[in-house]
Amino acid sequence: MDNLTTDNETPEHPYARLDPALVLDALDSVGMHGDGRLLALNSYENRVYQVGREEGGPVVVKFYRPERWSDAAILEEHAFVAELVEREIPVVPALQIDGKTLHAFEGFRFSVFPSRGGRAPELGDPAVLEWIGRFIGRIHAQGAVKAYEHRPALDPLTFGRQPYDYLRQHDFIPPELMAAWSSVVEQALDGVARCYERAGELPLLRLHGDCHGGNVLWTPDGPHFVDFDDSRMGPAVQDLWMLLSGERHEMVGQMADVLAGYEDFCDFHPRQLYLVEALRTLRLIHYAAWLAMRWSDPAFPAAFPWFNTQRYWQDRILELREQVALMDEPPLWPV
Image 1 (cartoon, rainbow, N blue to C red):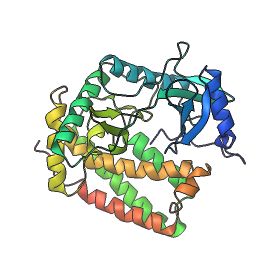
Image 2: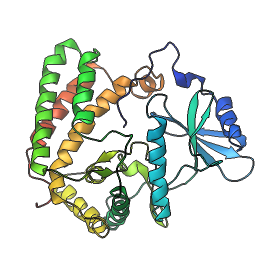
Image 3: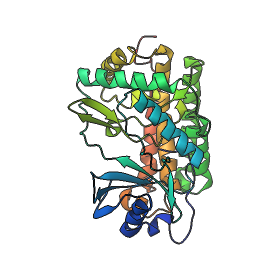
């Protein structure tokens, strides 16, 4: 997930030029020489490759989507991750090469990262959730030290109203569904506003931003956190709710497990739990607009063939109706 910037609508998408030879030449340009082994990793927003080297272990090279983040926004994310490394928090930082973490080659901006392995965490295990919670608490304690200056906050405007307006204005909704879809989104945004009102004024801090199980890799030494590309300012609970799944009573227990570790290192404002379903609702609205804004990238129609079909928008209407009801239920934790 990202800030909502639209790809250039040109006959050839910018990533069309990014072939294996260019990837290897870009790595050569910073003094690292690939040995020809190249593996495309699972990333749609950016293009990310694991590259074998003639000397040393493989590295991961990330080519940033043109016009998504400014250089300043990328660099302050790198700086935040570097702060976490200094505090021995298990994250994967961009490598400094000749004093820089962001490089340019043939019109692309890219960074190089160490290659780190791991498996998906067992989120059904209370001990694993507590362990992850401890590290998120440490990340947030540092994230609260100062604010981002160049990255937008995660809030009802950036993840709700702006995506909604984009979809309405760019003819993605089938005409026969527009009235029903617009009505339910308006109801959903009203519900989000009520949740934020109940939660009251809360501190915002630098977040991971996309802290689901796929961005937490497990090793014998415990978790480490990858891909801070969506890092932004927001409420702490944004980095907690995506770890939850199942029925309501299961999510209540999971949240208790996460907070048992989290609160060892960072205070948690219980009123934030009014935002769990609101943040889920905003993510659903934002995700649909994210797909729409990337539709000129050939990778997206190939990977998401179900998007922008009649059935897709019918399902989104039903999904948001469920969220409208859920946002009026009591929070997952006594407040």
